[in-house]
Image 1 (cartoon, rainbow, N blue to C red):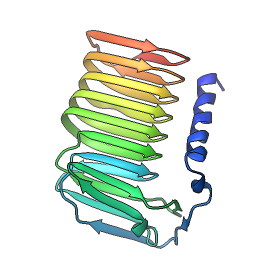
Image 2 (cartoon, rainbow, N blue to C red; image 1 turned 180 degrees about the horizontal axis):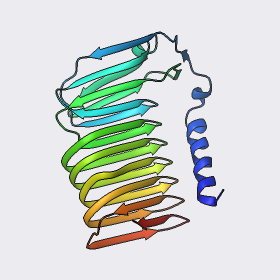
Image 3 (cartoon, helix red, strand yellow; image 1 turned 90 degrees about the horizontal axis):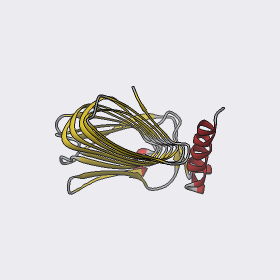
Length: 218
């Protein structure tokens, strides 16, 4: 195993085990009884999610459904504040089958994640689209944006080779990695054991690396 791979595993273990000691002894155990909770919400264009969920976003009338263990659903809180939908849990828990969240809104322009969220967003269309992650999350998106901003710290992954952008500003630290497509301008600041892979032929490329980080063009 090479050093970057080893460091990535170390970071993931530290994130999952060191961020919250309560996660080793969840206060709630899932009962294994599946249920879907349909929640009424107003429209939003930004999401902020804290926890460990499987999340899927698509364009459409504002809606939120959460599927998981019946006794855990009341522990998962959601509210729209301004233009931001916030989702979090009141206390640590362990689900038998995982928690799945389905989101719809008119547009999505910003995503902020904490923990170990697995988020998929289809057919993004925005002038500015920003994704910020602290932890070990995975984000997969496609669509078209003018300006892309990615700020990842920890061991997160940004899988977006099918998200076409004109300009991209990418900051990766720790053992994070990103795969993007950019047409005109790329600014990249990569440190630790992070890796950036990009496609396209941007006319302006400004890049800075440190540690054992790397940038690859494909």
